[in-house]
Length: 392
Image (cartoon, rainbow, N blue to C red; front, top):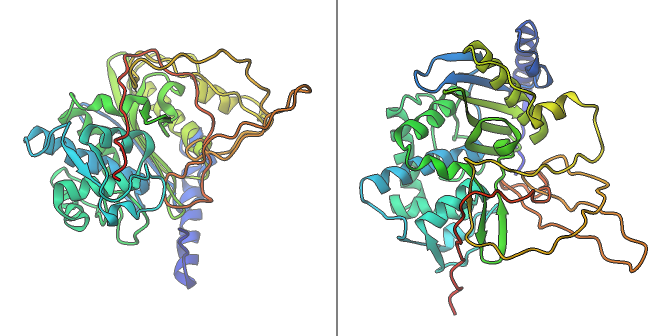
């Protein structure tokens, strides 16, 4: 869904964004320059234990949360689990209203369902809008009531500039937040639910025959990253909240307004690097995401395998896969969160059709994003989650 600014007000906002961006050029963290000038941009990095702010660029300016909203949905779910109001194996039923949500979604038909744990993984990895709505109904009775509960709980956490209108982050002009509030939420998810935080490190999970890859490519791309969530709608640009730990120091960062997932991830990596430097953490060799930022642009960046011991893969005993020679990749989509088909060179004999990965859209816009092929699975312990049979 596209949103548009109207009249002189829209021009004023754009002009203010350009002025604000020009003021930021003087700041020392040069990694931000790729996004400076966008009226949608803001960023913050804070130390997780104390909440001390290390970097702040428009962190209190109102922004649209997009799928970062699901962080608050999951906070409410974790709270309900802690208080005994639901269980991991409790059944979440898909209503007609929830099933009508646009992609990204699991596509469960009305009357079908899944467990609370499957729903958690669907939000973390797939960013499924239909499942977010169903979870809201499961806990709050209606999604509208659940959004009110989310807003009240957010205020109690110190998220004073945040207001929720749905559980998924699908576009709503009245659903707003700030980079500071989202980083605060990321920090509280880690400190309040240390026994649940591992879900945000899920790299893959199995749904029926499908292997769903987490939209968050910072997992494995940035040294020390172990969560939290990505988001995108046209009105917000590409957003991310990331938590990373090095040498016993944990940082939480948030950035809004990226023009692509590539720019967003590289920028987040640059901010975290500078945050760790300010905390006295010795610099590391450039992570893959930062090395890619420094390298000359290529038309077809190679997929990087995810091999992190602290990354959780929600799949048990994966079936053996035949070893194949990787085909030469000719074109890579600009956004890994929702992948468009990738063209591969055909062998001379015999001719074969080009492999086309499944298209995914994270937030309601079928033309917004494209996904990239799955990288190598993690070797971490896995568990199989199977889709329930459809009702007759």
